[in-house]
Length: 347
Image 1: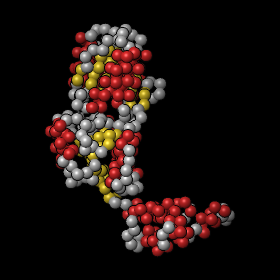
Image 2: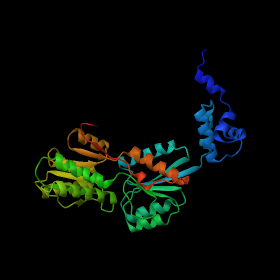
Image 3: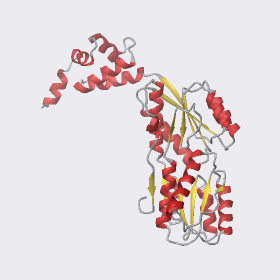
Image 4: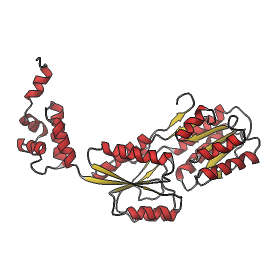
């Protein structure tokens, strides 16, 4: 059997080589490798790095030992309605990304809330106190919610929509004002029909929704003043209410040429557009790539989707949580992630 030069070199790497590279004693490397006695996380990490760099044959075992010694931490998440595909998928991504962490042994605790009630959100936050080591939540901005956050003694991360509470460690999500202005750009440049434009907004209590609407109005005011914007319709981020709101919008404004929908419940708005026979002639922009919006893009009921990539949201928040729990600093703006534009042509 022929053994390569690289394999022979790797075979010659000894515990002493790893120890010298890591700046520790041979006994310390042995303790990490064989779990004979506790070794600090920082020292274990140095040993692992040295073993990987030298190509030590047992580096895989070393890595497993280091992971076994990583502290166990519970990552808590408060999400909106479990019936929504979007939040179930986000929960699955959070679980997947947490399993990839190496600096901690993470377990994920998911709690769903079924309404935008401030008291219900506050109760969910307080209920997690003492059960998890950090919390990420999707929540409306409300004094009751902020008071509940202030009562915690763990790091708190706002997901998808910012919160005004000074006790929030960081926000993880897209830049909503930029996304809103991008929707304005698309409406102004791609919607060739004359007529008014309507806006559906889930809740102004979601600061993310408010920023989306503000960015959209800002761009349209600046670059498309010839397209009048109708008053925004708040539909409480509910598909049934979105259906009624869209139907009323279409009935009240026969000249409607476009709708910007910043929030969930897209299925309700689509139902109203189809029933009115307007699904193909109203230029419709919404958020989040889901099975519903993918199908609507394919049949031209939706013209553009602004997507918040859930895998990146989950990756970023679990990474920041692990750093925070390890006492490692990070810049707050690192929580902002890019959004993507989806059309029928790039599904």
